[in-house]
Length: 263
Image (tube, rainbow, N blue to C red; front, side):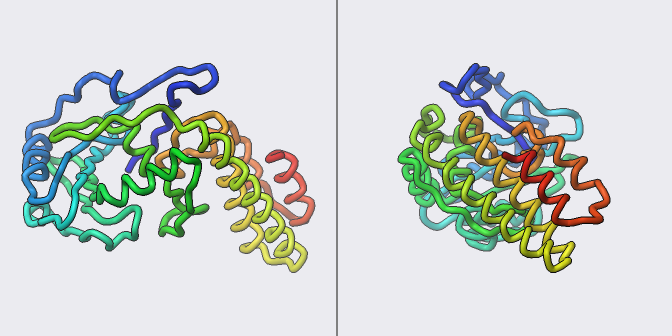
């Protein structure tokens, strides 16, 4: 899924960009046919457009991100006709499953979402409660409230889903505290690695701290982050890219600079 950051209603200086405001998407014929096939899968409740195309912020290179929301068992035979399917659960409890396709020459990511799981974590997110799952391809992990972020951004193409409200106030109040603890904890471990001369461990833990700090800022500002792509820049921490490009002769001194920039 492509990156997309969405300032939810009620945020400071609210510049709201929501699926309700984006124009109805015009789908290329082959993708529109795929959407029909996905909507017809037994068990499917709705098919949505996500990512930058849902926000009207796509460029010619953007993928098409399609989400299939379902309840109970899902018959993925129609999806399998287009490519290899990673069945529900294959990608973990949050990312679940899906397929990476090429349709009519365009890249299409199909993501399967179990509505029972989505509803569970969305309800907890509204109450300010969340967990973070380790997931391949993620530096700091995937917060369970990302499922609510997806719902907030997506445009329904087929079927129906109940609307979601603004960014939960309790999540904005409670999530930063956890992320602040996390990034400081990661920096402490980076420092222990630095003292031992472990460059890989130092940079790895420091990078994790930067992403966790970015999560804290976005939660404070009530900005949804669907994933970690460009999250550092979205949180106003773009200068960290240059810091990681510096040749760190003294790892401890380098970490001091990172910590000062994140504080």
